[in-house]
Image (cartoon, rainbow, N blue to C red; front, side, top):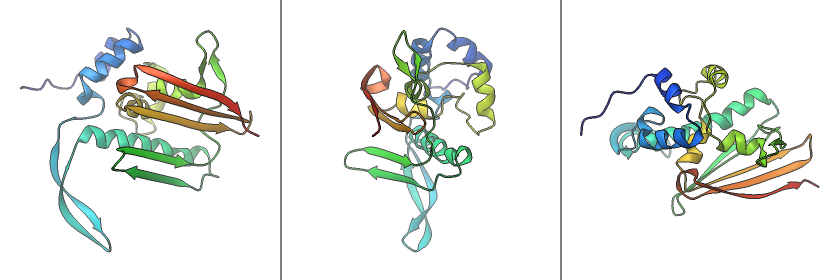
Length: 196
């Protein structure tokens, strides 16, 4: 099967103006444009083998690698925003097929209601809502985000379960939300709770 060349960024943005549902479908139909190839690839990498670095052939999916990288870049970039951050930990559970990323500090977004009509809080908007905004796109160019400004939202979109847990020290609120099912089709919210 012959692959089509990647579309230009401006064409992608213009095509996505139909709303987040159309954008979600477009990303799922053309993942190469957003995360890279979902097909397996074998390549030689230098791997830490205890004490030494050794070359090894590794079979992986570049798209999955990109999604993982997006989450780590997002977590690490929090250090720029919050110098008090001193912990970043990653837990990979091969048996459960899950990845958990934890970092401390002020938090990324405030725990506040941003859309009263739909009951959407800022963390849900930040981590889960796909939208295409030229201003946001311009801001993300400076943070090495080449996914069109979608970043960690792509990890959410391609996950079978994506859990957001954050706290807002200014408002004394804790927020936890679980996106379930493949491709962000359903979003089951946990309560927004006060921290005591």
